[in-house]
Length: 196
Image (cartoon, rainbow, N blue to C red; front, side):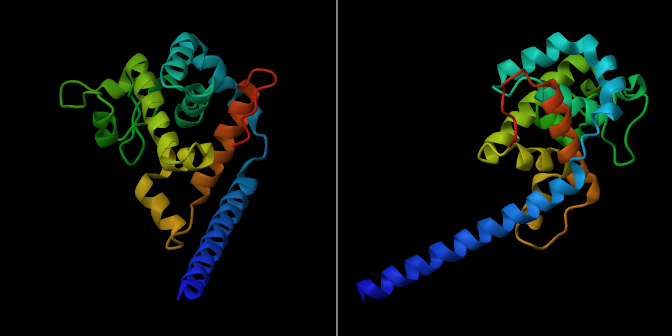
């Protein structure tokens, strides 16, 4: 019986390895489609966001993120547009502010969102909350920045469905991962590895 148990355990291990390899291949295929080094497209956003550089740096440090992470996310989320940062323009699905939080997610990160106050549109508060949320996603993703970015953009529920093979990752999300990683690489200090 012990040999049969060992064989079952070995077979289970092999199946898990195959599943993980297939997941990695699908994720890499999605990112390769997206990561085209489009940093030039985001340079104007980075210039506009530079006024918050100290806040981005402090938030990354506070939550243990690689330097430049929160600024890269904000550059892609808001494009550095003042109308988005200040809440004059929200996304069609209701995301608002520099970090493009949905109301429920913003509240879960400690931001007030009510009829009279919407802290998603306070860049300083939203930057801190965005870094906090990103750090949580990174922790839940075993340190895999690609997975954390997919969850930030697309939601953990959609990610779980994709990982189970029940849903296709939309181009918006695969592009988002590649864009944030490309911007982040451009912001990385010399010698810092941020490949995953």
